[in-house]
Every structure is written in structure tokens, then in C-alpha cells.
Length: 247
Image (cartoon, rainbow, N blue to C red; front, side):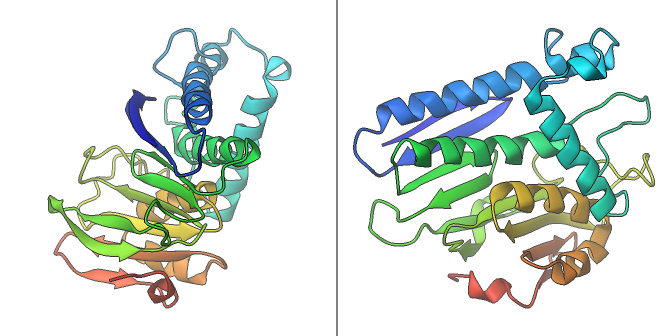
């Protein structure tokens, strides 16, 4: 069973191959809705908005918010500040952590409910497990940033997470904390495969902010592989990426 809904401002797809999938799918979508309610910086009633506006003290934060903020701070330190959820105006925007975190957690909920073969896809960041409906490993596509009707690479993550950062779909929305006014015009897409989708997502965001050199950061980071597409169409992949490439 496969279903897609618009949540957190993006299409979220859950596909479960195992029987009795409907309750698991409904639970996953309810979880994404709750995450949006808590973490969206665009909702006036969210917890992150209350924190940014000084209506909520740090010692009153939920356990989920504290966890996300800890992950964000760890990522800032691990990426030499290329990932930072604090914006120039002082507000916190944890979106760069929350999507991968929510996908990972939704996948864990599905697995805990008994599913063994499933996929969770939120805005192109994906966690899969087991086999697809055809009995084969899940095969995921890296979209051509210059023609969204084409796939430039097919990938079989085999239980690992995959995330893509880029400017081709949403424009100049990625933030370089070292140069806040920077426009990304030399690269358009960076896909990362990691131990799970949270690890892939947080490092894809940071590596993209590094520019073309971000692929070297991914190469040097244990457990990560990457595929970079530059503005001139040139692609560069890490040395171990070929182990996951299906085409």
C-alpha cells in the first residue's frame, strides 16, 4: 500500500509492502503532522516560534525540542559551522535537522509496529527497509536537476538513508553561516547516503553549503557517500558511492 499526503509543506509518501498497512500509514502521517505542529517556524502556535519570540524558557522545552537542538549543535561542531540553525536575525530554524529526524523516527515507528518492507519519503529524502513490492531491493532515483523528468542515477541504499540538498527545486534557500548573503551558483545538487536518513540529511545540507568542496568533506566522513552535480553538469561521486549505484 502506498499513500502520499502534503505535510510539513512537502509531499510525504509512505509505502508499506507488508499486510495490514493502513494503521501504520495513518500513524506515520499523524506523526509528521505533530512534528510540523511543534517545529514549524511558520506556525504562530509552534513550540519553536514560542522559543524564538521569548514566550518559552529553555528549561521548559519539550524532550523532542531538546533532542533536535542537541543534534543541531553537534552538527554545527562536526561541520566547522557550515550547518547552523541560528539565523542572522537570531531566530532558530531547525528545519535542516527536523526533516531527516522525522523521517527516521517515522520509519522506526513503522518497524516497531511490525513492518519489515517499507519506504518513507519526505521531499525526496528517503528511508527504506527490506524489499519493494517486486521482491527486490528498493531502487531510488537521483533526479536530474536540469530536467526533473529524468533520473541521472539509480541507487539501492539497502537499508541506509538517502538525502539530497540543492537549489534546483526550491531556489536559493540553503544558508551558508560563514557568508549569509551567498548565492549558490556553482553547484545544484548533492545527494548523500548515510547510515540512516538523519545522518544523510544533516550532512547533505552542510556539505552543499561548502560548495564544490563539500564532496571532499563527504569523502572524508566515515559512513557517508555522495554524488555532486555542478552547475555545468559535471558530476563527482565519492569512492564508495559505486557500491550503491544500480545504474
